[in-house]
Image: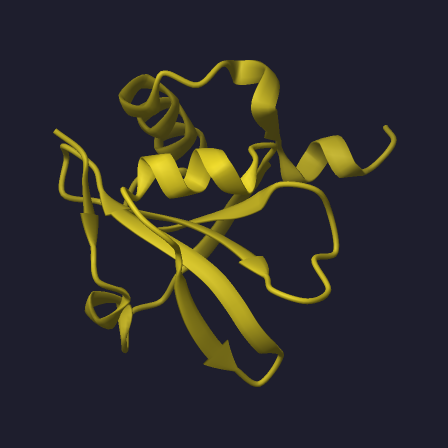
Amino acid sequence: MMRRIDDAELRGKRQEYVAQILVSDEYVQRLGEGAPDRVTDGLGVWLSTSVRLETGDIAVLARHEEHPPAPGYILTAVSDLSGEEVIERFLRETGLSESVVVRPQDDYPS
């Protein structure tokens, strides 16, 4: 079962951008069973909720607190899985629909 983890578990680990997930702040609070963590980096303050998937892989929903560049949250992962596998597992475990996912290639016209 997926469970929230402390953002401290991410320190020193490389996160890979996977997709944009079009969910509300309220959804992220329910998913994380509370307010997102506030994480500061060179770009400012981020709202971040990290969960460990059933596989042990880590999925993170994050957005810039003051100036989010796009709607929803960025999905990043600490995983050896491909981005598509992370998306598939994340959707299965959260019960979210495929319609909330904006993949990087969706951002660019073909």
